[in-house]
Image 1: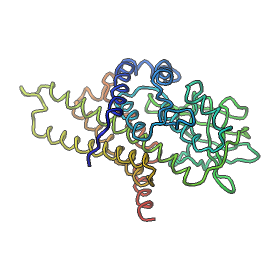
Image 2: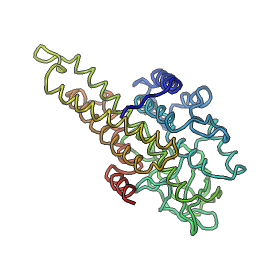
Image 3: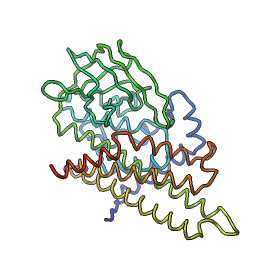
Image 4: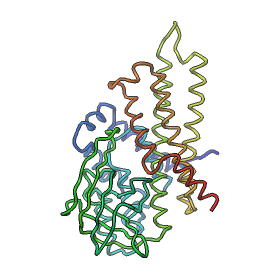
Length: 361
């Protein structure tokens, strides 16, 4: 299957790619990794105020730019290629959930703050499979109790959005991160370019935003999966390109190692895996943009891109030889992101089962 992007989409990719090259050389990524927040605040401000990327996928009637999942996938793919340390995925999670609230009077003030970048929100996900409905929290009298092991960008979020399974329907709540009774614990994680925090809720006051049906909850989840899948495809492509470039310069026995047949075979196999991963991400984004039932495609994209990303990371380290294992080399940065992304929002094994359930239902 071949996907072709129109001129507007190609221009969007070019703008985002240039921005990432300018803002996220490895030296800048390493500098930001060493900070407490792990975020490039200047780049995040520019993404919102100058490029409008925070509002990209938000409908126009909600204050956004009105682009769809395909354009969101393009942005995520380029962010994955660069490892730009910004809270874009958590913003996608939050705005996607908020967009499902029908009451404009409730939704608009929060959405305006999120798309402008003046506030950072994240969606609290179930720690087991990354599903938006948290089985770890209980709502009673608009107060939340329980604990969540890992919340994406929770260490610096101003607002936590939580979907709790109420007696009649899933309900979306908003929690101020400074609320009394809320205890935050930043986590020490493998990937320092993507931070998580754990939370303990002790009768924390929560604003009830509205109820959601099961289809809305699944759409939030599938949007997150499509975004993450395209990001992983971009990371796998970056690793492939870096590895090919290295094999063309590394000389052994008087020849570049890329000229050896065994190396060519490994790189050819990797190319096939990466191209299939990219197609899986594009297909899921196109289905989501078309309003189709995308759950099976979203899970397919998640596990295919996760497998390709981890495969590319392992091959990159091995084909770089001893230097690939060192802290000074950049390959391990993508390896850590690949491993982190592999389990985030559900493991490949879990999504294989979900895809089969969706296809046989």
